[in-house]
Image (cartoon, rainbow, N blue to C red; front, side, top):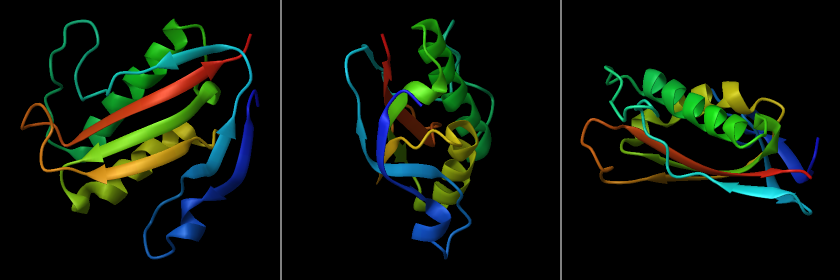
Length: 138
């Protein structure tokens, strides 16, 4: 792994009452490289900004994470270069579904993560938005 991950943990240990299995950590140390600051990604296509036709938090999260992966790859990196995510959801009842789905994309990566429940996102049909930061080593 390109970065030092401090105090790795899995959410199944931290939140045993929830059905989550995300690899996260308390801090990430990077040196040099190229920093990629990602705009908050929503469940829409990158090419035409059209929303996906779904109000399911799992499907929306898949699209968001696919966008994140695509943007990191377009910058010359891989998902293992992801160091931080901030997850915004509009309903706390979607938390497990969103985090479970996100976990499929960050397995073994261990980024730092902050999660927020917000009243609304920019469009009423959006249930989830995730922004991220990646550091691609030199």
